[in-house]
Length: 280
Image 1 (cartoon, rainbow, N blue to C red):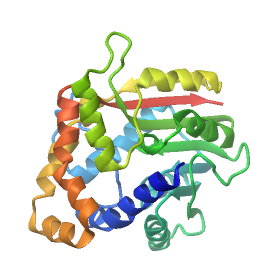
Image 2: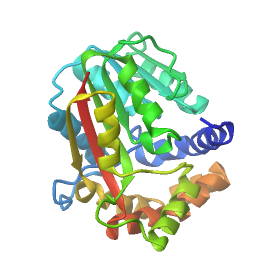
Image 3: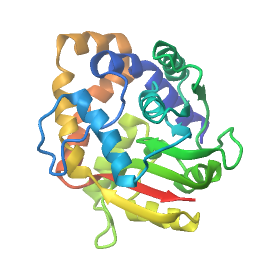
Image 4: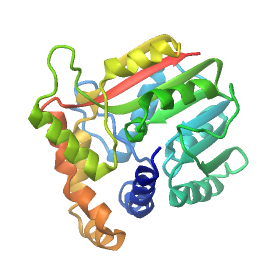
């Protein structure tokens, strides 16, 4: 991971994570609004529902040792550790996030089983065959080398273990390449959210096949999660959020002002919410 990108991602999440928790809580990912995206529900419940729907979809019913790649402030790690009575390790590029996740583990009485650290997902500080569940929820889009990232997830996965990866993608390009306008739209998103690039779900599936991951399954849940961005936009214009944005600094303000880029990306079918799971 290039030093510049590494620093951009770290600084973005160092600056914005406190405000996100204040407004939205511990889960820093999309919500699930039913297969057709039309269910009305509490925004935090929608985020928990996404985790539960992912577990149901992937068939994971138990785990003992979990790795949360791109753990944020520990939302998924702590939820999964509590649900499965498991040990969980979370990695992030943000020291602010790692420290807050550690505090939250203590508050939840899970500090003996949940540990968080700053680490690069493309060079993980773990032995081969360490985890029976590798969970990556909306972190793959930040990776500058998608193949290297998936190779690392595979390396640390125990034989028989499960990888669940959910990531922002662009539409498949097998029938038509991205237009110039679509490429510009993506570049605007990359610049705001510190992304090197995204790829399509079929491209991720091809990488997974080469690992070689077994029992590979993929799904596109774009419709189910798309309402999330309208709800985030609405929440960004409350007095609490506006004051928080002013405290958080310029990169967070730019991110908030650019939320419409993601909403339009979903509306035009350019941005896709891709799921992939498989076993080692």
